[in-house]
Image (cartoon, rainbow, N blue to C red; front, side, top):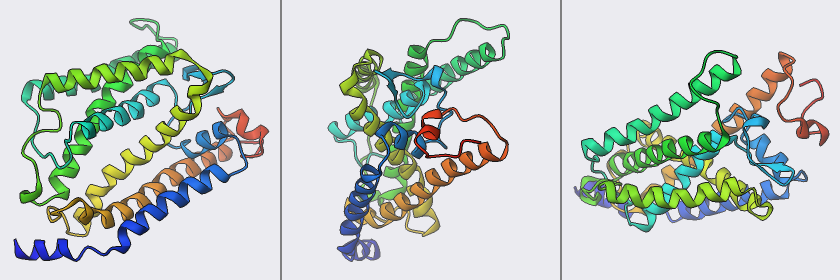
Length: 286
């Protein structure tokens, strides 16, 4: 235990400063770019989502950066994470009960069924029902609940030393799940309302959720590759690996988006983002 304690005590103070500076710089550069928020957000997240216009929610004449299903996934991730934070479930490392795991797994299955049904409609094949964006959103949110639970559990188990973990699960039971789903309903109503003033905060929420989700998943690999898993005694001890994970996450998101733009241009695939062409963000031939 002594090596881990001394390691935690030697956490460089520059890491929190570096993390805050990096987050501030990223936000400032993004907001300072001369294009509209809709254009910037669509371009930034182009590699994470198909962004089909007909599958998206619109607020006045502008749409969210994700289509309905991905808006649900990342919105569900964000809302669940905020609820878990409010419930003080940081550092939790316990596995949820088997019945709860079955329900969380079924959330992914339900989204998969809805996704397959939607694909069958696009292919003009036999399908169970007519897809709706509201259903895409809700099934995505359910998967977002499962994703957030997994990421919080991953960080708790891999990030912290056994002495610093809390034995409880991120979701202790169906009462916690009911709280999460109740708050999720509020997010659903906000998205389907289409009220113009909500577009900017919802867009920023989805961008932040996407970066946080990819960073959280990347953090586990950073800790494993650096052989620092299970060593943090305090949250501050994870700031350094989290900063590296954030940089890697941004590279992944940027590479996926840039790669998709290049592939569309190479294959001469019509862009699903015509507003990017009209504002000079991509070539007309994309």
